[in-house]
Image (cartoon, rainbow, N blue to C red):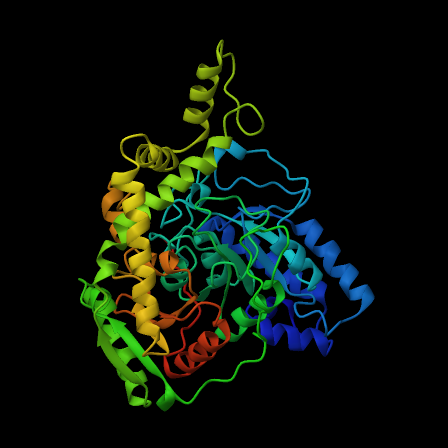
Amino acid sequence: MAQAPSLASLGLAEARAGLLKKEFSARELAEACLDRVSETEPLISACLHVFRDEALREASLLDAAGPKAERILWGLPVTVKDVYLARGAPTTAGSRMLKGYVSGYEAEVVTRLRRAGAVLCAKTNLDEYAMGSSTEFSAFRPTRNPWDLSRVPGGSSGGAAAGISARQAPGAFGTDTGGSIRQPAALCGCVGLKPSYGRVSRYGIVAYGSSLDQAGPLARSVSDCGLLLAAVAGPDGKDSTSSRIPPEDYASLSPPEPGRLRFALPRELWEARFDPETEKVLRAALRLLEGAGASLEAVPMPALRFSVAAYYVLAAAEASTNLARYDGVRYGYRAPEKSDLLGLYRGSRTAGLGREARRRILLGTFALSSGYYDAYFRKAAQVRRLIHDAFSGVYKGFDFILAPVSSVPAWPLGSFTDDPLTQYQLDMMTLPLNLHGGPGLSLPAGLGGDGLPVGIQILGPAFREKPLLEAGLLLEGLFPRLPEPPLKAL
């Protein structure tokens, strides 16, 4: 039998092969990952809830029944962001408002993961209600980047990305509303996939921006992201926004011939101001791809310049509506000893919600208010349509769009917590895709001179995840493979 300490470093495909050959058991694999969680959590704080006893019990039951190759994730440990409901387990969405809440039902993604044989080990940390880009706005504690513990892991799925990078689990699920899978994947040196809007059910996921939120996987390789997507993709009658377009076979991928691919490079993103080391890695990645025979062409997409403004109007407006349910009456935190209903609302929401969540609620409420709706919300929706049309126009002449994920590497903790506008501007590379609705894949392009990961993203037409993943396989083979993060101490 393989030694347990080495098992936590296996990717999903490697671990699956070993389980099916009975080189090690599902319990041994789960135990190795959970031991790694215990070892690394004091350093990175990636998890909000760890299900050690439940995971080991589930893994033992799987072992007793024997390996099942038809269950694509049989015996494989996974984590989910703490916006996914799981029956009988706590869900906080990173907020004091939901502290102590235990769900009586579960997200469709979690149900499908269990059906596929996955072992749920933990729920991961996030910016409160997925509103943030650094996982510093969790109500409980910030998550730290395994590559440098003084820096952020990105967000809002920072706990998921940090956990993958630190070898706590080989697979994770996050959500991407404005880049919340792709950006932390880039800053933590792993792979993250935002599927097309509607490709994966949102049922049972705590909502932030309902027309923008999308569930998706993070892993340490492109093919592993394909395995995770294969387990959960497809229509769901419980989600009215779920697409009926049948999923493809994401578990069987082959890289395309590079000479047959045409990539568009949006000028508005590639001509932005970059950290010099980040730009050096990105330009080297483009040279590698071009040297392999792929066609790269700069294209204007002027509508992208308005992405940040449009996104923060639309997302905040939807957040204002979605978070109205947290009123201290039906569930969640309730302020004590309030004599009137308005006082109850005000007291519960002020104490239960953090400042970033309150900020976005106020912005959204203002944008939706009488006299301002046309000036802000309606105009932002019109800009969204222009951005959608810009993507569609580019895909008529190109296979994919290639773009940076972030203009800077992971930044020191606390750099922008009092400067929200600067932090919002850092999302300019990822927001446009959510406004379009298509899929995007972030993967490591290399390490900068400071030893921090730099990511690049491939964006594709809606519901074309398989060609996108296959293009990702090509890039993954060309780019340098990252070592394990050093977990550098403070």
